[in-house]
Structures are given as structure tokens and as C-alpha cells.
Length: 290
Image (cartoon, rainbow, N blue to C red; front, side, top):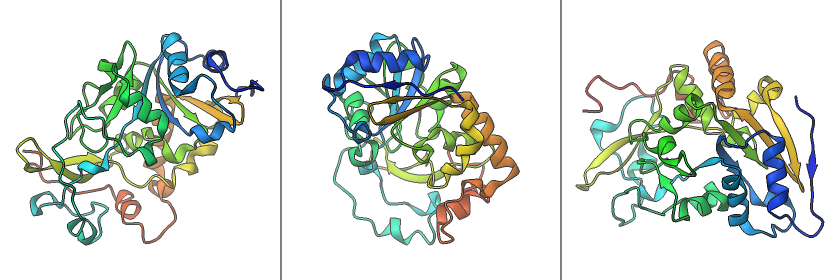
């Protein structure tokens, strides 16, 4: 494990503080998927969140963030309600109140901000951001490789951006958050043979379409020890930044999931998503996506 280096500015964090952290972690010129908590800094961000974003872009990074938007979720229809789908008897989803909103498209700026965080919201709302084509679990990216990273995402291929991140030897950066928010571990689950869960959204004709999504991530902290040797760390004010090669997370977690499917379980015996995930996820027939 790399040694910890502390970056602090007694009068508030500014662009050089973030540039120093980016450089210390060796992220310059790289693609980086960022999960973050701005509260973790415990200090004023003098340059603002836009200044923090520009610190990455100025170091020739392409940054990608989750931009999930549950407002676009629709009620399920019978042909898209497979077994082992992390839904129990489906009653929760069948009884949900739906919002009257136009179907998703990649120009949308809707985001579940409370869950995704303000940094992700700022990235999505940047006029140069590129958004993946997934109504519920899209990613948004900024930088020279933004279109390359998220352009392959579809309602069926939810983790295409994370596969591209791995193919491009990119990184996952956790800013003041833990592995329980690291979406890439859902990609590791898929790589280990699990089928992503199915949820629902409206297509362009207001027809209900199935979409692939992740499951429960509360048990992902179980990977802390096995991934510790792959982590690089730096501290910015009070915020712990932990950085991994994307391929390291996927390769290590895939192996452990294959050997012990219960490693991802959150520990709640009533968790439908975890219970179904350890058994491989939903069972889809050959014509499901037709």
C-alpha cells in the first residue's frame, strides 16, 4: 500500500490542493470514475466544485460519474418480470406511484442528486458533459475521452462504461466514500456470471422497456481487506481519497465472487436483491430482449 500524504490549506481548499492530490495518485492523463462526498472534506472548497472539476480536466483527466435517475422508473409489465429478480413478489414495484415525465434521453439533466452527490450533479450539468443512454443507471463524463467512455451504454448494456474504463486502463477514485458505492463491483458481479437485475422505464413510444441495473451494494465493504494491497491513498483536508486500477477491482472481486458468492451479501437475511444475486440473478429466456 502506498503511503498517505496529506494536502491541506488552512484557509480553504483551492485548485492546487486538488492538483497535488491528482498528481500524488498518478492520475494525470487518465480516465477516472469518481464517487464522492463533498462533506468528507470538512473544509471550505475555496475554488468551488467547478474548480475541483477543472483541476482534473487541467491535468488531462477524463472524469466519469454515476448519474442515476430513478425518476424515470416505470411499473413492470408481466413479460419483463423474471424470477430471481431481487423484487420479492413485485408488489412494491407494482404499487409505486409514477411521475408524469417524458421518457429519458441523453440530453436530460435529471439526476437522483441526494444519492449521487453534488459532484456528480455538477459534472452532469456541465455544458460539455456526455451522458450514457440508460434511463435509470446512466454515467456522465467530461474530458477528451468522454464520448468513448459512455457512448456504448444502453438500456441492456448498463456497465459498458465500466468495461471501457477497464479496457483503457483507467481508475476508480473514492473521495470520502467507501466501496459500498463503487458501482464497478456490480460489473465484477456480471463478470463473475451474475445477470444484472431488471427494472423498467418508458421507451420513446411510452411503451415499458426492460433495463439492466445493479443490486444491493451494502456488502461490498467485505472487499476492503482483499483490495487493500491495490489501493493508493492521499488525504485532502479531512477527506480520504482511495484510488484503484479499475481492472484490479474487477479481477479481484470477480475471483472472490466466483469462489464465495456470499461475499457480496449485505447480511440482511430478508434482502431480496442479495438473496437472488448470490444465486445468479434473474432468469431470462432467449427472447427476453427481443
